[in-house]
Image 1 (cartoon, one colour):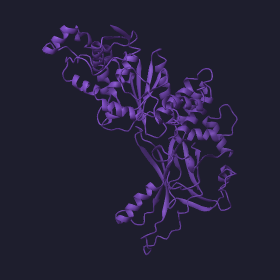
Image 2: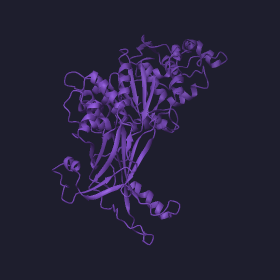
Image 3: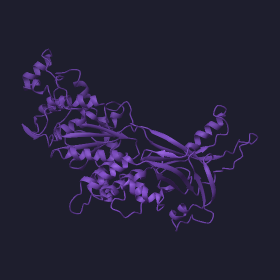
Length: 536
């Protein structure tokens, strides 16, 4: 009999679908065997994961799974139901792989996907597949079982305390004359029922194509580090939807902070860590890894954070939680010419073919569960504009690149001020959302069908946004040379002395587009300047 340690896995001749079928538990086995024989779904999964650098296992499992480091795995979202089982990872397959290659209790899944659908797995799904104590029992009334037990001496009572998935895999190995030797460092499955689900599953998700709140970013990578360093065999399994943007952001931040590398591999830098994730997750030339500008911006905040020593980092995190801000204005530089703030909205005007447009700016932050956005203030060029003239703001002039070909005598500026002043901000992580909208020519109840269609259409003509952290942008503006220039009292003192204005400048080309792409639609302006002050 071949003996193969669970760490290595099965010999290539092992199979999930061949051999004699025994039925100790009639209701569960057909479901499992049907899944094992579904070669069409395996082919679809292989095609779906073709751009990815997938780890080749010898268990016969088709899994989109990549090792970024020996103890960090990234995969796409595992599901439990069709039709997504055709092309997504199967949760049962993933747990089989983790149990046989790394052992019970040696892995922890980190779920960063917060959007939900019917194919998602629940905590109970993971618990059931990991700990099925008392479910798998011999059935002495099943004649087939009695006959088969006599033929191959397969004792079901020896396996009644293992998971359903591992049970059938071991059963198939028995048929193929391959023995699986349990790892010495694995936790017996019979003991898993007393372990809280949080010890092997963490749900800390946020919206797709977006960065996590900075404090959450630190919380996650610290937890990954604590788990993977609690034992030499421990591994972290990270997944979002596709295992790209959200997983990549966490992986890169983790590599920068906890995996400095050796020799020529300097993963403590942002660029090197990005390359490690890209090269281990994707096939050459397929993808550049993390590419969404806002996610990269937060990784740059992380890089700035790591510049300080550990004592100062704790101080920074404390200051970040205490910081409060007062929003002043948003300046739109070189706005699109289709914006006409002097449009005559007289009832006698003919609106049949010509409509006035406005730029709408939403100031947003995550809701409590981070599965949606809260718009805490809206600004429009038709309602909140206070000036539209030749560029006259000293700050705008000072930060606009001097070699910009767009900087001429006729540069224009639209300044938007909040309707409720002052506008205080308690969230440091905010989102600026820019869209083109049609002005409300009539009340919503009396708008014609044509107006409603045009109004909805214009919202898709241009759509862009960006995320930023106000605290780190404030620190970046500071000109104080003190070793503790990040402290709020020093920043406020600098503000009160008039030495520094706090602002965020970004060009149109550096905004995020629709659904993580660079597709922003119609260009609404050349750049924007957001201004604020620290609230005292």
